[in-house]
Image 1: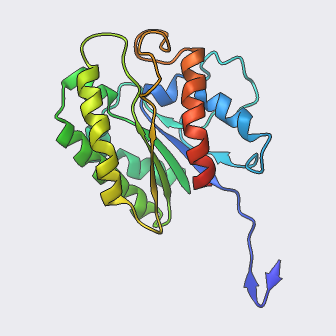
Image 2 (image 1 turned 135 degrees about the horizontal axis):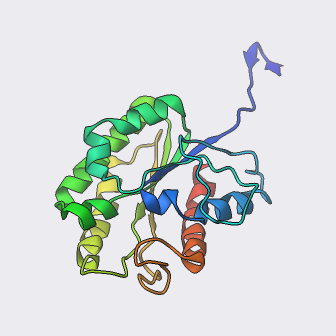
Image 3 (image 1 turned 180 degrees about the horizontal axis):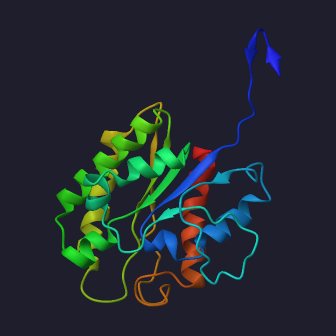
Length: 212
């Protein structure tokens, strides 16, 4: 369609679910895709290098994602892994649920995790100056004594996001912690069960609709 000499393109929006195993080996992405099918955003293209099936009993959903089990936010940032992932699979909108492995595996300082988040946002914007970003305050764990530190990280995220926010590339923070049971809503203390997947979907969904 040519309007006044300018070419108007009805391009498909590209959405990257980005994170660790809580993005990779779960079913909230399946639930999200299915919920979008009844909306004007049915054509949104999920992107990423991962395509694993997670026993979601769903043969139809777009499995593409950038969830990496066991990965630390600090390592992804410092090793510039997201840079390569975005080069291969460009994105207009990204969700990020990261920090669990930094806390559980290596007890990293919250300030270091937040610094990694800053680096990751910079890398996202270098890839696409108008990328829309949805960052999660992460879900609680149902094992160990990690939730005090999870809560410290989650408390640091809103002021950090307000600092990083921009008109061209807004950041929305969503609270995946409140109302989520580390034991009741996780199948193994770490990864959501069906009830947990539904809770995560319901928190991601309104922010993603705004971002789209």
